Image (cartoon, helix red, strand yellow):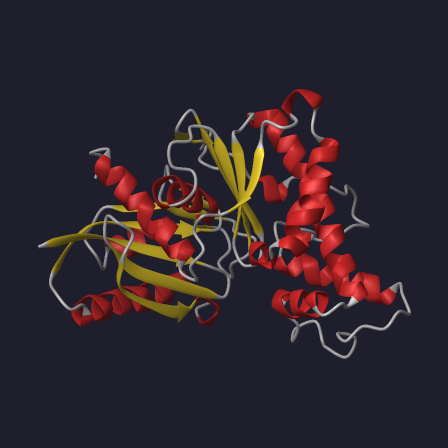
Length: 324
């Protein structure tokens, strides 16, 4: 019987699930709306039913070796989601315990960016690397850091929250979902990009094809498409976003001395629009001893389902280590 891992990527809008074999092939995948479930218990029940139906639809019987879950503020030590800025669920959600009541399998819960880092190490461009970081650019900004071949979790399981480092201190700056002001992810994320564009448009009288779009209607892809068509204000928003990201990545290098930093997620798909200003600011702000030694790269996980692939890699990594 074929062995598979179940990967689950919980995002603020949608949750993706997939059965993935050891080579990273998808045997089946599905999605449900996270935002439709304000109560985590109801969400988990719906998720478990999705998993059961998906397993029944597979072309052949499988042996599930474990479940890897990537989620905002996932705590691998406790199997919980704790005070997530990008989810409706407040407080502490005992996710692994809730899911284990429906599915009796080993369950690992971690930060979605940590899952992406494991995926990069197993399936992507970080194969053979011992020191690297993955920055996820989606609704928020996450980071997974690998030191000496091991994910950095810290005392409580929350090490590496680069998105919640302060770049603009004080309550006059952007409010973050974490309850503070001026966090990096309020500037460098899909949502942060929109906030930047609207600020630029409010301070300028230059024309933009996006001026008639409402904030809720607009997506980061709309801004990228406009920038590619030559929209000056959309391009300026990407430049500002990249400059702030490059600055903070230079700080990350000083803390962790990685071989490479990978950009992962929807905003990273804008390629040159985000990568070029990030590279410039990164180089300009690096301590001289690191210049020319740290690669800044796009993630090697390029499929639309790369986040759930990274989550499944978490289960495979533990299985290969004999821990599940």
